[in-house]
Length: 243
Length: 150
Image 1 (cartoon, one colour):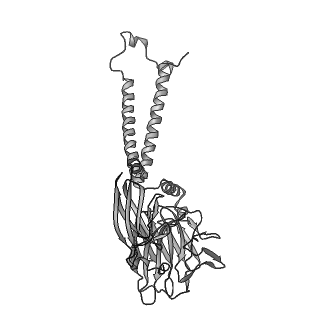
Image 2: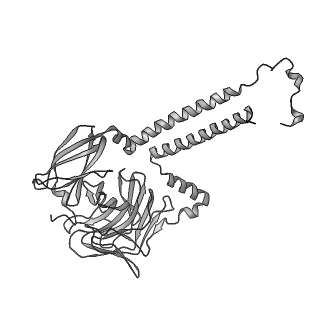
């Protein structure tokens, strides 16, 4: 025999509740998408919240044996691991392999530089970046000494298809109490559309752009400098202190 | 409901008592909420499509042209591409370029020469040609460690 009217009504009720749930989930996902909040970030925040604060301050990624070389028609090479750290040849750079996220804090430490030219000395950090089919896409924070006659400058710039966009997102000069000959540790906090750079713990520059919302991170050197560093860490935001 | 808790049949000797809840009323309310949520999700979907450019593709495409000059004022062979798309073109010896099939709406056009680039925000209208005019690079554009020699 067929099902009773009550059974049919009960089944229909379940379909309606399922529809309600699906629509609410769709609205939540679309609303997050429109507001620019990454669902994976949100999931990670909830996850780390449940797991406890200690875990949330573990590095998301750190320098290891391998780097994704930026070598192409423009960049001359990647990053080599040394006994006591890493070496970046002039106009070379690399990204930490397999890492991509939206908000994080980057810490480059133990920096020494050897200037191979009298001009275009400098180094920096790439973030929300990827080695695309046509070249580098993403952002850079750089400290750059053009030559002995010009003050050392610091700036955020944007790269699209291996091309550096001018004018820079934000540029300023290296504070006088930071000695170029004793290269500072460098940190960049990437949060939403705002990027904040620190040198030896001191905030030196803040810029903002909304082109790229996520991507990897890495280290690079300018055309006249061979860079060495001991460590490069990608940390979650809001950990105890920016070093 | 347990059998013992069932209402007595005497209660119904004169037919169904007045004021019993109408089961279809609750159902109607649920459907009103479902329709409301469906409308909200449709609006959000349209907003989402407008944000990621899908709506612009549906709206049609236009064309952009312009002439590019280097920092010395000479026409140059530069690369032109539209951010977030695979569209690109190269200007000819006279610096002239034409790029067809650009999705309608707000677009960012990048003009690149010797590894430096300029961003231009333009509004593309379906079926129309936008003339970006004369675009000049400046000496400062090539003040970097790699493109100071052509």
